[in-house]
Image (tube, rainbow, N blue to C red):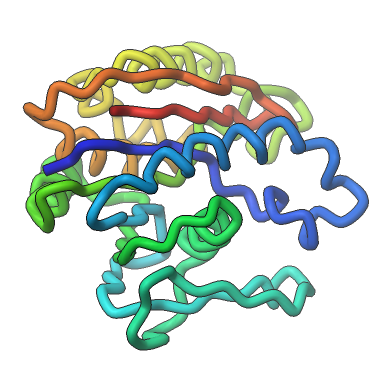
Length: 230
């Protein structure tokens, strides 16, 4: 069953080698993510969930790289018995967070398409929660990328209310509020956390977890949240 979850955004700039001279701009976010991830150390299995161009599952290891960003840096899932296919970009950031946080328990990973329907995502979450007696999720994704005129998606007046709803749901471990996130609106606001958060909603159904929102800011005009459920 699900006993803990860490929710983090997954911009490549979290990795100092990728951010280079701008690394210090995300120091607070980076450290807060690591604090949340470290709380996953007392579980039997960690499952990393993030958006991907297509669905994929890694159960016997996985390797990811930051070569696409011009950085010769490679990471792998902890507890791997095989390298497996290359991890999706969001999962690669997740593997880096686990490495930096010192998490060594066996780890699976799951990429979910950004346009996956709600019921499919929550059903997947229910299945992930049954993989071990004590499962922890590392859930990767952010809010709207339309918070300011300089944001990747420009300014959209719907972005701030959307992010406020998501932040409240993550703070309160409100699975129904996460299920209610609209896939169409989420796509229009470029919120890549919608699909992974709905996997979390399915996994946490009936688990009676409490939530704690550790970070709620919009650097670069993108809503980033860090939350812990336990």
